[in-house]
Image (tube, rainbow, N blue to C red; front, top):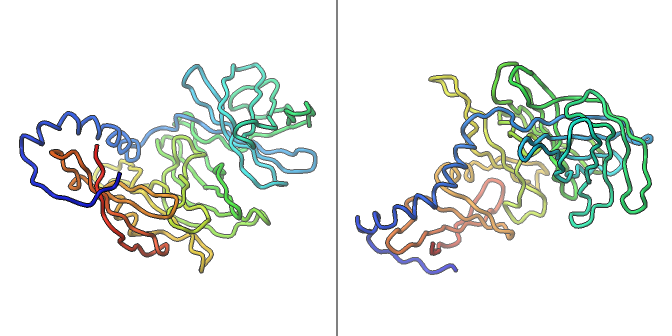
Amino acid sequence: MTQPIGSSPQTRAGQQRHLQHLVLRLTPALLLGLVLITPTAQANPTTTYRGTLGDTPVELALTYDSQYGGGMSGYWFSESERLPMALESTPFHSGSALLINIMDNPTLPATAVSLQPFAEGADALQGSLVDLRTGTQQPLQLQRVTRFGGSQREAFEGELLQPVFDRDFYFSVHAARKAGEEVAQVDSIRVISRATGKRVQEISGQWCLSSVGTKTLTFGHFHAEARMDFQVQGYRVEASDGRVWCSPTRYYLYNRDLRTYRSHPQLEQFAAQGDLRFSPSGQMEFSQQDFINYDQRTRRWDYYRVITPERLEYLSSGEERF
């Protein structure tokens, strides 16, 4: 519950008393920070395929997860609907058939992709699109386009959809990695019209491709505008040793007047200093290490409203107990 701000001096004994509690609270954040800034190999390779369903162009992306004996996820995209829809994470055994649900309905999927036989990373796939309500099947043949990730010996370059969309747009990233490199670089984020399938905006820059490439962009509503906003991790090369760091976090908010996505330097500055969180109403909440009172077990949060993709307005502050 949010309370009015109160202040009291912290004692050395109080800090020591809550040290263990603090370590436990900070450990997840520290681990998250390491994930964000430490380069990692593409542990979850994604392979994209294209083909046709009847006369309609379609695209399938399959992401391999080696945990728990192996599983597949990814997305399905059809030009007739222009909705990149996530696939349900599904166990599989190499050489056997794969039946993977398209999450068009999160509680009761209506369609699935059946691939017989199936091998992860295969050059070609064949099977059918299955209507789970009627059992009707449409033949499906797909050819491999790009394999993102896998062995560091493998170079790649290609475009990867992000399986999130809003009423007007869907999104893709263009990424490349040279043989021997550990981290793939995204050099372009593309905003595509659902109505026409045409690119309406291309944002150029340097960002990291996520270890799961289809999750490179993290979406949310960062201000009151109804359209989706997104964040992405930057790509930075350390001058002293050449190491790649996936930081800082970059924020892109939709500007209704300009009808484009724009970066938000103030949000990025706050993110570099502490923790950010967003409410559905478009309120941004900020806290940092200095806002924690270990004696009283409280943490201060400052509340802001995002006025435009370039401006913030301070609203108030409050405390939360931990």
